[in-house]
Length: 118
Image 1 (cartoon, rainbow, N blue to C red):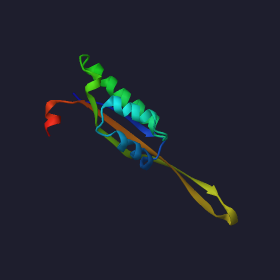
Image 2 (tube, rainbow, N blue to C red):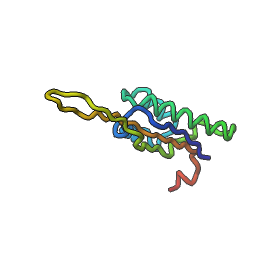
Image 3 (spheres, one colour):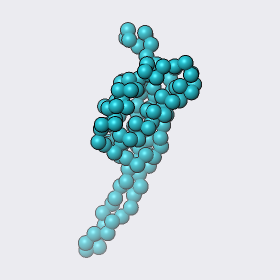
């Protein structure tokens, strides 16, 4: 049974969050959480909490589910809003500052015999 969790407008750039998302894609939840706890990236704590939340959602939907059998089926990082402002520079010029954010979605699922065979 699938369970999902998402965060919108997380204050980390999508390009940087995708590096962390690629580390834990298709891993068991316990392995993914231990991997993220030792990863020194800004997106690591955000994705850690999302995977924990998705596992808790799965257990809430079906209390008999075993969390050890859950794996990260899908993790998607999309671009969120971009805050823009101007930074004054010398001789009347200006530089544009772009503060990017991202939408992150995590889907966990139980590993079944169909997943193992294919």
